Image (cartoon, rainbow, N blue to C red; front, side, top):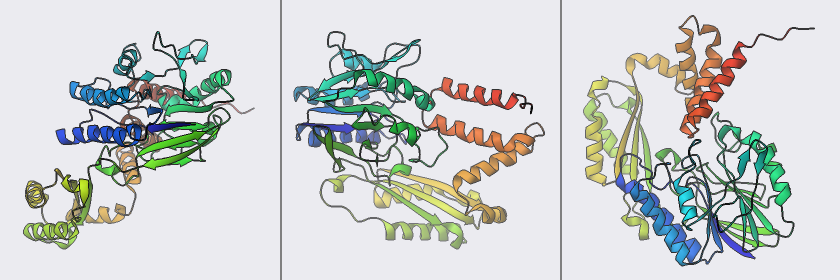
Length: 428
């Protein structure tokens, strides 16, 4: 039997909303999860399924945050096994990275497949070189992988072939993979199809995923814990945590643990349409925020001021220049004392009311597509391809937001350009 902790997307060093406190929140979440669910539970090892750091170039504070947790685990005799994610992977032309350094220094085991002209190879962990693609801990065989991005489907075949040569019938087998999975996010990003994912099942008992910041499970063997903390306010509603896993032979049980340090996030949306004057809007806005402000929780969370986001929407009955966004932020901060106040202005001036009426019920992704198509169709050279170009622009945008490497985005653009210029096939 073995017990392990599976976490992902720790994002140490993240900087959001220019707040040092939010950077520390990610450290406190990492530290608290280890204390509660690794050290107190006396796990045999910890898995980090990518994006341990938020960036390849790690700031000193982020490294300090990493060393506090890794040092506690090493003192407790708990090994750490990690793979690279899209945020902290090594550069293509550089053999050095901070994760590789931490592995060399003995703070973790970084598992990496070996890629060559002959394909993908998996090599056993060598303690002397502190390198390898898989290792055995507490009766569990753990395989690592790389961040493959949009090429993950193509890479999977080589990984499966390599797994076949190193599968151990008597061991519980885990694979760590940092990737999007089909159907888990409503955005047009190339993701690993479920059918391809299922091809791993003959070799793997537990697929430890990372990358998607919300929790999900698939068929009792694929597990994605989500990020420890919400990386932006849009993620606040997603369930997330860490998996505490116990194995028994080739079977296992899991528990998603969610009780640890978390900064609360409060979001409110207010329709400005019913407030015909600037002062009336201000008074109505403050009354609504006061009425809906959440009650102070008990215990540890009571001392954590929330991040607050206010969205203004609807038809604005007066000039946009009379919107006092700075006044709203300052008054909310003074009255309610949140950690941060963000005001998003999504109002539409009255003169654009007809257009708003046509589009306000349309999902944001569809609105973006329609706007792009309209802009592209105004140019004679793009008019005939406005639809396909708009889709390509949106796909490129999502790849960039997901942290895809620039060279891979350029390769996608070149591939699409080549496909669009190929002459049509002649019919027999």
